[in-house]
Amino acid sequence: MARSSEHALSFGRAVGDYDRGRPSYPAEAIEWVLEQIDPAHPGGARVVDLGAGTGKFTAGLVDHGFDVTAVEPDALMRERLTQNLPTVSALEGSGEHLPLDDASVALVTVAQAWHWVDVAATSLEVARVLEPGGALALVWNIRDADVEWVARLGEVIGASEAEKYGSTTPPVGAPLERQAYREFRWVAEMSREQFFAMVTSRSYVITMAEAERDEMLARLGQLLDEHPDLAGRTSYAMPYVTRVTIARVAARE
Image 1 (cartoon, rainbow, N blue to C red):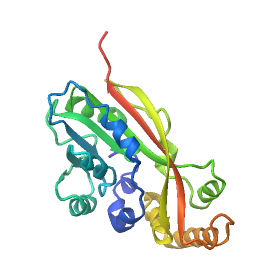
Image 2 (image 1 turned 120 degrees about the vertical axis):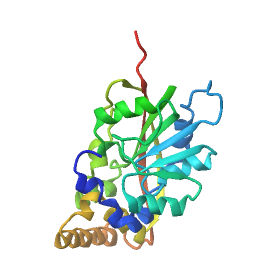
Image 3 (image 1 turned 90 degrees about the vertical axis):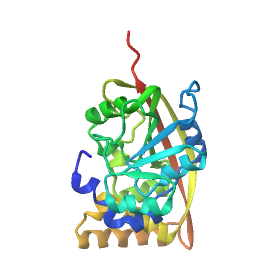
C-alpha cells in the first residue's frame, strides 16, 4: 500500500495491541454500509474487506451473514484474523493489487485503511472487481475531540494518519465518485490496558524511538491519573464518530 510503507506494514509488529486496543464499529454503521448492496442483486452477495487487519470490521460483516473475503498485506495481521474469524477467507493483497476476478464483488469495504493506499490505482482496482451497481465503503473511527479530555488526549499522543486523512470528503479516483456520506456517534468502553494498547497499536508509535515512546506513554498515564474526568477510573468511555463514505462507478453521460 502507499504512503509510508514502513508505517503501513508496521502493524504486525504490534498485532496483540492492535487486536486488544482497537475499537469495533457501531452496528448502525455496518448496517448502513450493507444497505448499499444493490437490492436487485440475485443473491449470495460477496463482500470484500480490504486492509482488514485482525478483522475488526470484518467481524461485523460476518455477523450479518454475508460471504466475506478479507484482503490484508501483512502476514501477521492475516494470521490473527484467521484465528479470530476461521470461516473468513483471508487473502494476501493490497488495494493496488486485489487478488479478485473482474466484476466479482457486490461491496468493497475499507475500514481504517484507505489512507494507506494509492488512491488512483486502488480506485481503478476497486472499479474492476465491483459488479455493476456495486459500491465502495470508506470507514473511519475518529475520536470525538469536541470532548475536552479527548482533545487533551490528542495533544499528548498526536494525530494518526487516519485522523489527518479520514475527512468527510475522502479522495477517490476515476472511475469512482463519492455518492453518500453519514456519521455515527457512539462510545467504546475500554480498560486501562486497552487504552494503552489503542495508543501503542498506532503505526507512528510502533515506529517511534524507544525513549520517545516511553516519554509519551508516561504523559498518557499522567493524563489518565490526573485529569478530573478520568482520575480514579478503571474503565473509560471513549466517544467516537464513525465516518462512512459510499462511492460507486460514475454513471456514463
